[in-house]
Image (tube, rainbow, N blue to C red; front, side, top):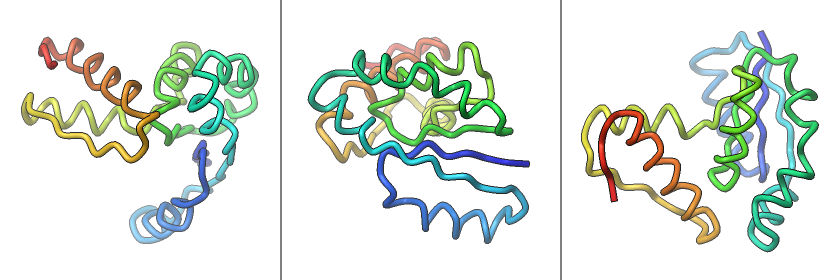
Length: 134
């Protein structure tokens, strides 16, 4: 089994590898770095990244799972998942679990440029659960 992580920064690679080594050492892990995908939405908007990465789902489709780690790219990850169900925006399952627990959700947002994508993703998940979150 191969799991690919789509990173916009390499800062979390060691942590992810350590967690997998402890909990599930068997899957092969591939780390695909694309730091330009973080910088571009901050300055040019998500549409620019979308056109730059149109071929990415095909390149990553041979993995059992592709975990998109950047909340700025959340809408793009969700878009990829429509045609490639092995691609998951990594925060989606966490948001869904949070919504199962309650409707008062707190999100730590590290970059201002991720705020809109993060909040939109939470609201979208809430619609699926029938909750109205502001």
